[in-house]
Length: 436
Image 1: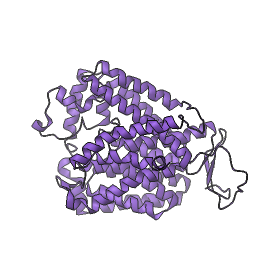
Image 2: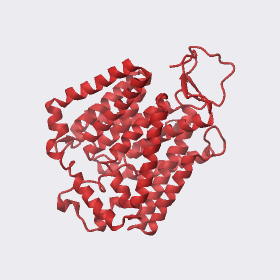
Image 3: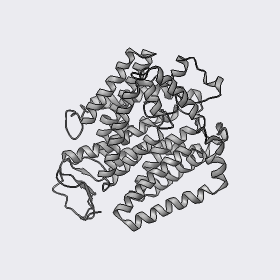
Image 4: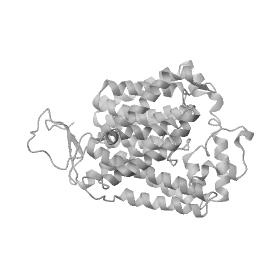
């Protein structure tokens, strides 16, 4: 089925186009985001909620935890400052998680994780390439001295680039394909021109974690990688471009006005510290308290932090619970699964996104340019861990293999495979059976 095969690219388009400067296109894309959620649900129904090679859907531990959190999201409409808005946000969050953990899980089972990632990356790289070449002629390419191209805000480039650059780097490092390197360069050029400090920092974090993994496995290669990374960062930091466009010392003290948003957030949280103002309410919280951002010289979304934002929405106790769970799970995965290439790099991207969330309100809004890709990467990490725990066999690039084909002998031409058994390590084997 054509639509199913290329659905990841179709799925990504509305999230990307909803952030462009062209109002008509953005308005259509805003509605289309709901459309792709519905299509994802219909695909899951058509395939009878098949996952892990089973005809009937089987729940995982994540599904149970997600259902509990979604229940809290919806229940907060009872005390929300805008009940209808909270219900709408809860429904969109449920559809986002369902699409990621059911529809695209099945897609990875059938076509492989690499196919899923490449198909998702195609419209992203295409748009960012056009952003570099065409936006100068048909859009307002600069905002406050920073490159934004087609987008409404330079920060949109920054948050989009974190996941997409991390995936492009992960694919290139494993397969050494020129197309992946070209994609990575296109994303990096956009990121640098957009002068996104937080985006560059978390991308260095991803690459640095990858180099640390290399240091543990192959000390010489890993040490060389760390030297190259820190050397490149040092040389770049000495350029006038970095000093004037990236560092921007005049905005460092107040983190580009974010400290003022965080001060407002603290006041809002103090008013409702335990239950918050309702899921999704961080976007409308200023209006509720009669604060007009423009009148006090501020411009931004919500309270400019996913951490403060969740506390505003659902209170301090829930915020602590959520971030302790997700940080603990991610760090535990990075430490315990360092030997596994794919799980570790997915975990590095998840950790980078959590770090980025300190200064960006992006983790809990189902319709933004960051979350649609981020939660798919989280799904891929959790999926591999689930298959490892349950002893379900997959090929190295992630497609499901319930049993090896008997008529196909092992040899150099055989697709690399992962042998998964509950009692043995998760190890990638090359076609001739040697460990990588």
